[in-house]
Image (cartoon, rainbow, N blue to C red; front, side):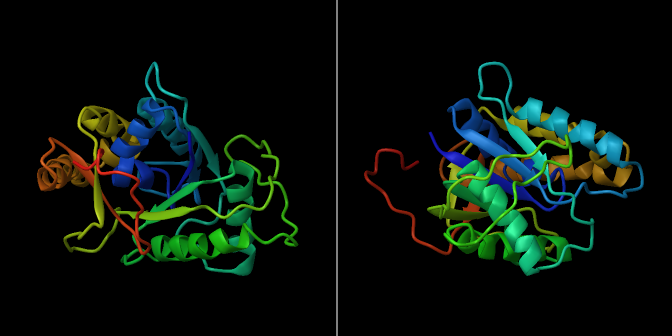
Length: 245
C-alpha cells in the first residue's frame, strides 16, 4: 500500500478536486493524509472552530465503514497570505518525511488564487528538500489537534500529480483520468460536510452541481460513469495495460 499525501491550500480543496479518488484510495487500503495548509478562515459564514469540525466530518465521509481511515493535519499558515519561502518549504518537507510519502497530489499550478499557486510551488520544492540527508527538520505539528508527527528518514516521493481545483475559467486538459464510479455520492457528501461553504451561501450551492457535471464529463472521456482528471509533468510508467480504462 502507498503513503499518499494530498495537499490543499484550504480545507475543502482536496474534496472538490479529487474527493472521489481519495475515497477510492481509502477503500483500497492506502494510507492517505490530507494536509490543510491554512484553516480557510475567515469566510462569511465560517469560523476556525466550525471549519475544524467540517474538515473532520469530510474526512469521515470520504472513508465510510470498511475503508482505511483518512488522516488529516493542519499547518495553519495564514489564509490568503501563503508565501513561497524556505521556512514553508521545510514545513512541507517535514510532513513529507513524517508521512514517508510515496505520492503527492497538489492543485494544478495555474490558478487565479494566490494561495493555490504558492502552495503548489512550495510542495514542488519541498519534494526535493525532503530527500536531503543533512537537512535538520523539526517534527511537524498538527494545528488541528496540537499533536506532533515524528519525523522520518529522508525520502523522495516517486510520484507528483496535480488535481484540478482552480479558480480560472478554463477547461482542464488532464494527462490521465481516474475512474471513480461508485464514489460520486461519497465525494458530494464530503463537500456538503462544509456546511458554511456550500450549503449556507446560496451562491455556492451551484458548485456542487458543477462538480457532479465534471464527474460525468471526465468519466465520459474514458468510457466510465464518473472520473476525475489529473495532470503530470513526468511520464507515468506502466507495467501492463490491464488497468487501462
